[in-house]
Image (tube, rainbow, N blue to C red; front, side):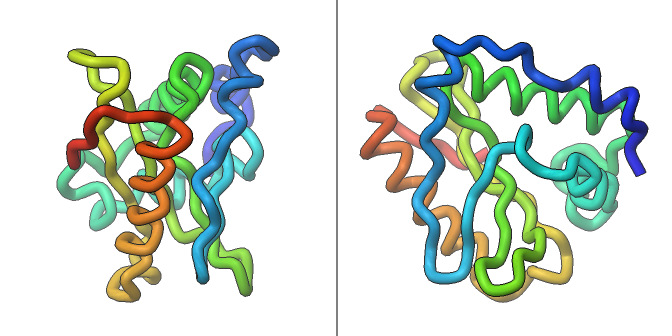
Length: 151
């Protein structure tokens, strides 16, 4: 698993003014719920991002230090922009599905890239579509996005 010492490096500094605006999650779906990386067992990130099949098209698999860096980026995106690639879970059994979410683009703060990474046992069940639909609604309604791009 991921070293607890390295994971501590990733933890956010609690900035109350920023965190207040970064508390909205995408709405749950019929089968899925969203959470923040800061609220869950961080070893789930290793399950996801150290898998060569899951990360094949995003430069992985990732080592421990790279996973910690990814978690730190998610925390920073939450703090600064109120978004991240939110961890997702099955409603009925609370099993970890992966993540789906947004990251800000550098060309316009109200424009986001959207993506998802799913644990292999959850492939082929249309869960990415289900989670993505909730994230798109979240981006345009409460967040007021101008545009969303895949990637």
